[in-house]
Amino acid sequence: MVKASAKAPAAAAGTKAPGRPAANKAASKSAADRKAVEKKGVGKSAGVPGKQGNIGRYAPGKEEYRDFYHTMLLIRRFEEKAGQLYGMGLIGGFCHLYIGQEAVVTGLQTAITPGKDSVVTGYRDHGHMIACHIDPKVIMAELTGRDSGISRGKGGSMHMFSVDHGFYGGHGIVAAQVPIGAGLGFAHKYRGDGGVALTYFGDGAANQGQVYESFNMAALWKLPVIFVIENNQYAMGTALTRSTADQELYRRGESFGVQGVQVDGMDVLAVRAAANMALDHVRAGNGPILLEMMTYRYRGHSMSDPAKYRTREEVQNIRETRDPIEHAKKELQELGFADEAWLKEIDKQVKAQVAEAADYAEKAPLPDAAELYTDILVGSY
Image (cartoon, rainbow, N blue to C red):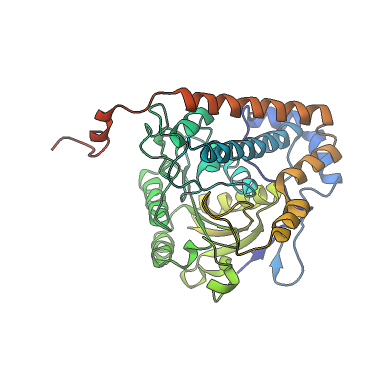
Protein backbone atom coordinates (compact mmCIF):
# COMPACT_ATOMS: atom_id res chain seq x y z
CA MET A 1 0.00 0.00 0.00
CA VAL A 2 1.36 3.37 -0.97
CA LYS A 3 0.58 6.40 1.12
CA ALA A 4 1.54 9.44 -0.88
CA SER A 5 1.04 12.87 0.47
CA ALA A 6 2.39 15.06 -2.29
CA LYS A 7 3.26 17.91 -0.01
CA ALA A 8 4.70 20.86 -1.69
CA PRO A 9 4.12 24.42 -0.78
CA ALA A 10 0.78 24.94 0.88
CA ALA A 11 -1.95 24.50 -1.65
CA ALA A 12 -3.66 25.56 -4.79
CA ALA A 13 -7.29 24.82 -5.45
CA GLY A 14 -9.56 25.14 -8.38
CA THR A 15 -11.23 23.68 -11.35
CA LYS A 16 -10.93 24.00 -15.01
CA ALA A 17 -10.85 27.35 -16.71
CA PRO A 18 -12.13 28.19 -20.15
CA GLY A 19 -9.79 27.99 -23.05
CA ARG A 20 -7.63 25.09 -21.91
CA PRO A 21 -4.71 24.90 -24.38
CA ALA A 22 -4.60 21.95 -26.72
CA ALA A 23 -1.98 19.34 -25.83
CA ASN A 24 0.23 19.94 -28.87
CA LYS A 25 0.08 23.71 -28.42
CA ALA A 26 0.93 23.43 -24.74
CA ALA A 27 3.81 21.10 -25.51
CA SER A 28 5.30 23.50 -28.05
CA LYS A 29 4.93 26.61 -25.89
CA SER A 30 5.74 25.39 -22.42
CA ALA A 31 9.23 23.87 -22.50
CA ALA A 32 10.75 27.02 -21.02
CA ASP A 33 7.86 27.33 -18.58
CA ARG A 34 8.41 23.81 -17.33
CA LYS A 35 12.10 24.46 -16.78
CA ALA A 36 11.18 27.49 -14.70
CA VAL A 37 8.69 25.40 -12.75
CA GLU A 38 11.23 22.67 -12.05
CA LYS A 39 13.73 25.26 -10.85
CA LYS A 40 11.23 26.18 -8.18
CA GLY A 41 10.89 22.53 -7.16
CA VAL A 42 7.49 22.00 -8.74
CA GLY A 43 7.20 18.66 -10.49
CA LYS A 44 9.87 17.08 -8.32
CA SER A 45 9.30 14.37 -5.74
CA ALA A 46 7.77 15.94 -2.68
CA GLY A 47 6.69 13.13 -0.41
CA VAL A 48 6.62 13.11 3.36
CA PRO A 49 9.04 10.92 5.38
CA GLY A 50 7.96 7.65 6.94
CA LYS A 51 5.30 5.51 5.36
CA GLN A 52 4.25 8.18 2.90
CA GLY A 53 5.46 7.62 -0.63
CA ASN A 54 6.31 10.11 -3.35
CA ILE A 55 4.12 11.05 -6.26
CA GLY A 56 5.50 14.56 -6.58
CA ARG A 57 3.79 17.62 -8.00
CA TYR A 58 2.74 18.23 -11.56
CA ALA A 59 4.84 20.71 -13.59
CA PRO A 60 2.42 22.83 -15.64
CA GLY A 61 3.20 25.31 -18.37
CA LYS A 62 2.28 28.96 -17.94
CA GLU A 63 -1.12 28.86 -19.65
CA GLU A 64 -2.02 25.57 -18.04
CA TYR A 65 -1.32 26.84 -14.53
CA ARG A 66 -3.27 29.99 -15.31
CA ASP A 67 -6.11 27.73 -16.43
CA PHE A 68 -6.04 25.85 -13.12
CA TYR A 69 -6.15 29.14 -11.21
CA HIS A 70 -9.02 30.46 -13.31
CA THR A 71 -11.11 27.36 -12.71
CA MET A 72 -10.55 27.38 -8.97
CA LEU A 73 -11.39 31.06 -8.77
CA LEU A 74 -14.54 30.59 -10.86
CA ILE A 75 -15.74 27.86 -8.51
CA ARG A 76 -14.97 29.97 -5.44
CA ARG A 77 -16.78 33.06 -6.74
CA PHE A 78 -19.71 30.98 -8.02
CA GLU A 79 -20.19 29.36 -4.62
CA GLU A 80 -19.94 32.68 -2.81
CA LYS A 81 -22.67 34.06 -5.05
CA ALA A 82 -24.81 30.94 -4.53
CA GLY A 83 -24.52 31.51 -0.79
CA GLN A 84 -25.71 35.09 -1.25
CA LEU A 85 -28.70 34.02 -3.35
CA TYR A 86 -29.61 31.40 -0.77
CA GLY A 87 -29.59 34.07 1.93
CA MET A 88 -31.91 36.18 -0.24
CA GLY A 89 -34.38 33.31 -0.51
CA LEU A 90 -33.78 32.77 -4.24
CA ILE A 91 -32.39 29.26 -3.71
CA GLY A 92 -34.50 26.82 -1.73
CA GLY A 93 -33.92 23.42 -0.17
CA PHE A 94 -30.45 22.21 0.67
CA CYS A 95 -27.36 23.94 -0.68
CA HIS A 96 -23.89 22.50 -0.02
CA LEU A 97 -21.01 24.82 -0.93
CA TYR A 98 -17.60 23.66 -2.16
CA ILE A 99 -15.55 26.59 -0.85
CA GLY A 100 -12.09 25.39 0.20
CA GLN A 101 -12.10 22.15 -1.80
CA GLU A 102 -11.62 23.63 -5.27
CA ALA A 103 -8.17 22.12 -5.89
CA VAL A 104 -9.58 18.59 -5.87
CA VAL A 105 -11.90 18.82 -8.86
CA THR A 106 -9.56 21.15 -10.72
CA GLY A 107 -6.56 18.87 -10.45
CA LEU A 108 -8.53 15.75 -11.28
CA GLN A 109 -10.86 16.95 -14.00
CA THR A 110 -8.27 18.83 -16.01
CA ALA A 111 -6.57 15.44 -16.39
CA ILE A 112 -9.53 13.49 -17.78
CA THR A 113 -10.77 13.51 -21.38
CA PRO A 114 -14.11 15.30 -21.96
CA GLY A 115 -16.48 13.19 -24.05
CA LYS A 116 -14.64 10.01 -23.11
CA ASP A 117 -14.49 9.82 -19.32
CA SER A 118 -17.37 10.16 -16.87
CA VAL A 119 -17.88 11.87 -13.51
CA VAL A 120 -20.29 11.14 -10.67
CA THR A 121 -20.42 12.69 -7.20
CA GLY A 122 -22.62 13.40 -4.17
CA TYR A 123 -24.63 16.48 -3.30
CA ARG A 124 -21.75 18.99 -3.01
CA ASP A 125 -21.64 19.08 -6.80
CA HIS A 126 -21.55 22.65 -8.17
CA GLY A 127 -17.75 22.72 -8.52
CA HIS A 128 -17.69 19.34 -10.23
CA MET A 129 -20.11 20.64 -12.85
CA ILE A 130 -18.06 23.75 -13.54
CA ALA A 131 -15.02 21.49 -13.90
CA CYS A 132 -17.01 19.48 -16.47
CA HIS A 133 -17.18 22.64 -18.61
CA ILE A 134 -20.89 23.20 -17.93
CA ASP A 135 -22.05 26.80 -18.35
CA PRO A 136 -22.33 28.49 -14.91
CA LYS A 137 -25.57 30.15 -16.07
CA VAL A 138 -27.49 26.88 -16.38
CA ILE A 139 -26.04 25.63 -13.08
CA MET A 140 -27.16 28.77 -11.26
CA ALA A 141 -30.55 28.63 -12.99
CA GLU A 142 -30.97 25.09 -11.69
CA LEU A 143 -30.17 26.28 -8.17
CA THR A 144 -32.97 28.86 -8.44
CA GLY A 145 -35.38 26.27 -9.87
CA ARG A 146 -35.74 27.80 -13.34
CA ASP A 147 -36.86 26.15 -16.55
CA SER A 148 -33.53 26.94 -18.22
CA GLY A 149 -31.59 25.10 -15.50
CA ILE A 150 -29.49 22.09 -16.45
CA SER A 151 -32.25 19.77 -15.09
CA ARG A 152 -35.16 22.03 -16.08
CA GLY A 153 -35.42 23.39 -12.55
CA LYS A 154 -36.50 20.06 -11.09
CA GLY A 155 -33.20 18.87 -9.66
CA GLY A 156 -32.01 21.81 -7.64
CA SER A 157 -28.62 21.89 -5.95
CA MET A 158 -28.23 18.17 -5.31
CA HIS A 159 -29.62 16.52 -8.43
CA MET A 160 -28.04 18.04 -11.50
CA PHE A 161 -27.12 15.88 -14.46
CA SER A 162 -25.73 16.16 -17.99
CA VAL A 163 -25.00 13.16 -20.17
CA ASP A 164 -23.65 15.51 -22.85
CA HIS A 165 -20.88 16.57 -20.46
CA GLY A 166 -20.28 13.12 -18.98
CA PHE A 167 -21.67 14.26 -15.63
CA TYR A 168 -23.96 11.68 -13.99
CA GLY A 169 -24.99 13.56 -10.82
CA GLY A 170 -25.39 15.04 -8.16
CA HIS A 171 -26.84 12.44 -5.68
CA GLY A 172 -28.58 13.30 -2.42
CA ILE A 173 -28.25 9.91 -0.71
CA VAL A 174 -24.93 9.44 1.06
CA ALA A 175 -22.70 7.04 -0.94
CA ALA A 176 -25.47 6.24 -3.45
CA GLN A 177 -23.23 7.47 -6.27
CA VAL A 178 -20.44 4.97 -5.55
CA PRO A 179 -22.15 1.89 -7.05
CA ILE A 180 -23.28 4.11 -9.93
CA GLY A 181 -19.63 4.96 -10.48
CA ALA A 182 -18.79 1.26 -10.57
CA GLY A 183 -21.59 0.85 -13.12
CA LEU A 184 -20.17 3.64 -15.25
CA GLY A 185 -16.82 1.86 -15.13
CA PHE A 186 -18.53 -1.35 -16.21
CA ALA A 187 -20.15 0.50 -19.13
CA HIS A 188 -16.78 1.90 -20.24
CA LYS A 189 -15.22 -1.57 -20.15
CA TYR A 190 -18.20 -3.23 -21.85
CA ARG A 191 -18.17 -0.71 -24.68
CA GLY A 192 -14.39 -0.74 -24.95
CA ASP A 193 -14.35 3.04 -25.28
CA GLY A 194 -11.24 3.56 -23.13
CA GLY A 195 -13.13 5.76 -20.70
CA VAL A 196 -12.61 6.02 -16.94
CA ALA A 197 -15.27 6.69 -14.29
CA LEU A 198 -14.21 9.35 -11.78
CA THR A 199 -16.26 8.54 -8.68
CA TYR A 200 -16.25 11.01 -5.79
CA PHE A 201 -17.53 10.53 -2.24
CA GLY A 202 -16.80 12.02 1.16
CA ASP A 203 -15.22 10.84 4.40
CA GLY A 204 -18.69 10.37 5.89
CA ALA A 205 -19.74 8.13 3.00
CA ALA A 206 -16.58 6.06 3.44
CA ASN A 207 -18.29 4.09 6.24
CA GLN A 208 -21.27 3.02 4.09
CA GLY A 209 -21.57 -0.64 3.13
CA GLN A 210 -22.35 -0.08 -0.55
CA VAL A 211 -18.91 1.51 -0.96
CA TYR A 212 -17.27 -1.84 -0.23
CA GLU A 213 -19.63 -3.79 -2.44
CA SER A 214 -18.57 -1.42 -5.20
CA PHE A 215 -14.88 -1.87 -4.40
CA ASN A 216 -15.32 -5.64 -4.59
CA MET A 217 -17.10 -5.63 -7.94
CA ALA A 218 -14.73 -3.06 -9.46
CA ALA A 219 -11.68 -5.04 -8.34
CA LEU A 220 -13.14 -8.41 -9.39
CA TRP A 221 -13.86 -7.21 -12.92
CA LYS A 222 -10.92 -4.78 -13.10
CA LEU A 223 -13.20 -1.89 -13.91
CA PRO A 224 -11.69 1.46 -14.97
CA VAL A 225 -12.77 3.45 -11.90
CA ILE A 226 -10.92 6.07 -9.89
CA PHE A 227 -12.59 6.24 -6.48
CA VAL A 228 -11.96 9.63 -4.83
CA ILE A 229 -12.57 10.29 -1.14
CA GLU A 230 -12.85 14.04 -0.57
CA ASN A 231 -11.85 13.96 3.08
CA ASN A 232 -12.87 17.38 4.39
CA GLN A 233 -12.49 16.13 7.98
CA TYR A 234 -16.07 16.61 9.22
CA ALA A 235 -18.54 14.64 7.06
CA MET A 236 -21.91 16.21 7.90
CA GLY A 237 -20.75 17.60 11.23
CA THR A 238 -18.80 14.95 13.11
CA ALA A 239 -15.01 14.98 13.16
CA LEU A 240 -13.38 11.98 11.52
CA THR A 241 -11.60 11.26 14.80
CA ARG A 242 -14.97 10.73 16.51
CA SER A 243 -16.67 8.68 13.81
CA THR A 244 -14.06 6.45 12.21
CA ALA A 245 -11.90 3.79 13.86
CA ASP A 246 -9.29 3.60 11.09
CA GLN A 247 -8.75 7.13 9.85
CA GLU A 248 -6.35 6.20 7.05
CA LEU A 249 -9.15 6.08 4.51
CA TYR A 250 -6.81 5.49 1.58
CA ARG A 251 -6.36 1.95 2.96
CA ARG A 252 -10.07 1.10 2.76
CA GLY A 253 -9.65 -0.88 -0.47
CA GLU A 254 -6.80 -3.10 0.75
CA SER A 255 -8.87 -6.21 1.38
CA PHE A 256 -10.11 -6.05 -2.20
CA GLY A 257 -6.67 -5.48 -3.69
CA VAL A 258 -7.47 -1.85 -4.51
CA GLN A 259 -4.37 0.32 -4.18
CA GLY A 260 -4.76 3.56 -2.26
CA VAL A 261 -2.92 6.87 -2.22
CA GLN A 262 -3.32 9.82 0.14
CA VAL A 263 -2.83 13.22 -1.47
CA ASP A 264 -2.67 16.86 -0.34
CA GLY A 265 -6.04 17.93 -1.69
CA MET A 266 -5.30 21.59 -1.00
CA ASP A 267 -2.53 21.65 -3.62
CA VAL A 268 -3.80 21.59 -7.19
CA LEU A 269 -0.44 20.44 -8.57
CA ALA A 270 -0.24 17.55 -6.11
CA VAL A 271 -3.78 16.57 -7.10
CA ARG A 272 -2.95 16.74 -10.80
CA ALA A 273 0.13 14.55 -10.31
CA ALA A 274 -2.02 11.99 -8.50
CA ALA A 275 -4.65 12.19 -11.24
CA ASN A 276 -2.08 11.43 -13.94
CA MET A 277 -0.73 8.49 -11.95
CA ALA A 278 -4.22 7.10 -11.30
CA LEU A 279 -5.28 7.44 -14.94
CA ASP A 280 -2.16 5.62 -16.11
CA HIS A 281 -2.85 2.83 -13.61
CA VAL A 282 -6.49 2.39 -14.59
CA ARG A 283 -6.07 2.80 -18.36
CA ALA A 284 -3.37 0.10 -18.29
CA GLY A 285 -6.04 -2.41 -17.28
CA ASN A 286 -5.03 -2.73 -13.62
CA GLY A 287 -8.51 -2.14 -12.28
CA PRO A 288 -9.64 0.56 -9.82
CA ILE A 289 -7.58 2.80 -7.57
CA LEU A 290 -8.51 4.84 -4.50
CA LEU A 291 -7.37 8.42 -3.92
CA GLU A 292 -7.91 10.04 -0.53
CA MET A 293 -7.82 13.81 -0.98
CA MET A 294 -7.02 15.58 2.29
CA THR A 295 -9.02 18.78 1.98
CA TYR A 296 -11.15 21.16 4.07
CA ARG A 297 -14.46 22.94 3.67
CA TYR A 298 -14.68 26.49 5.00
CA ARG A 299 -18.46 26.67 5.24
CA GLY A 300 -20.85 24.42 7.14
CA HIS A 301 -22.06 21.11 5.76
CA SER A 302 -24.94 22.97 4.15
CA MET A 303 -26.17 26.56 4.29
CA SER A 304 -28.26 25.67 7.37
CA ASP A 305 -25.26 24.37 9.34
CA PRO A 306 -23.68 26.85 11.81
CA ALA A 307 -20.63 24.52 12.13
CA LYS A 308 -20.39 24.80 15.92
CA TYR A 309 -18.37 21.57 16.04
CA ARG A 310 -15.17 23.49 15.21
CA THR A 311 -13.67 26.82 16.19
CA ARG A 312 -13.45 29.94 14.06
CA GLU A 313 -9.74 29.95 14.79
CA GLU A 314 -9.33 26.54 13.19
CA VAL A 315 -11.06 27.64 10.00
CA GLN A 316 -9.13 30.89 9.87
CA ASN A 317 -5.84 29.07 10.31
CA ILE A 318 -6.57 26.83 7.32
CA ARG A 319 -7.58 29.86 5.24
CA GLU A 320 -4.35 31.65 6.09
CA THR A 321 -1.94 28.74 5.73
CA ARG A 322 -3.39 26.25 3.26
CA ASP A 323 -5.88 28.00 0.99
CA PRO A 324 -5.49 26.44 -2.48
CA ILE A 325 -6.26 29.60 -4.44
CA GLU A 326 -3.97 31.86 -2.45
CA HIS A 327 -1.19 29.30 -2.76
CA ALA A 328 -1.63 29.10 -6.54
CA LYS A 329 -1.68 32.90 -6.80
CA LYS A 330 1.59 33.17 -4.90
CA GLU A 331 3.24 30.42 -6.92
CA LEU A 332 2.11 31.90 -10.23
CA GLN A 333 3.85 35.12 -9.30
CA GLU A 334 6.99 33.37 -8.05
CA LEU A 335 7.26 31.44 -11.32
CA GLY A 336 6.79 34.56 -13.39
CA PHE A 337 3.56 33.16 -14.86
CA ALA A 338 1.38 36.05 -13.67
CA ASP A 339 1.68 39.55 -12.28
CA GLU A 340 -0.67 41.61 -10.15
CA ALA A 341 -2.34 43.16 -13.20
CA TRP A 342 -3.24 39.76 -14.69
CA LEU A 343 -4.54 38.49 -11.34
CA LYS A 344 -6.76 41.55 -10.91
CA GLU A 345 -8.06 41.25 -14.47
CA ILE A 346 -8.91 37.55 -14.14
CA ASP A 347 -10.72 38.21 -10.86
CA LYS A 348 -12.67 41.00 -12.54
CA GLN A 349 -13.63 38.70 -15.44
CA VAL A 350 -14.69 35.88 -13.12
CA LYS A 351 -16.83 38.20 -10.98
CA ALA A 352 -18.53 39.53 -14.11
CA GLN A 353 -19.20 35.98 -15.36
CA VAL A 354 -20.72 34.95 -12.03
CA ALA A 355 -22.81 38.14 -11.83
CA GLU A 356 -24.13 37.39 -15.31
CA ALA A 357 -25.01 33.85 -14.24
CA ALA A 358 -26.86 35.14 -11.17
CA ASP A 359 -28.77 37.72 -13.22
CA TYR A 360 -29.74 35.04 -15.72
CA ALA A 361 -30.90 32.72 -12.93
CA GLU A 362 -33.05 35.40 -11.33
CA LYS A 363 -34.77 36.45 -14.56
CA ALA A 364 -35.32 33.06 -16.22
CA PRO A 365 -38.92 31.74 -16.14
CA LEU A 366 -40.07 29.04 -13.75
CA PRO A 367 -40.97 25.62 -15.20
CA ASP A 368 -44.47 25.15 -16.57
CA ALA A 369 -46.76 23.04 -14.36
CA ALA A 370 -46.86 20.41 -17.13
CA GLU A 371 -43.19 19.68 -16.40
CA LEU A 372 -44.37 17.73 -13.36
CA TYR A 373 -45.24 14.89 -15.73
CA THR A 374 -42.04 14.80 -17.79
CA ASP A 375 -38.74 12.97 -17.20
CA ILE A 376 -40.44 10.28 -15.10
CA LEU A 377 -40.18 7.26 -17.41
CA VAL A 378 -37.69 6.63 -20.21
CA GLY A 379 -40.34 5.37 -22.64
CA SER A 380 -44.12 5.01 -23.01
CA TYR A 381 -45.91 2.20 -21.22
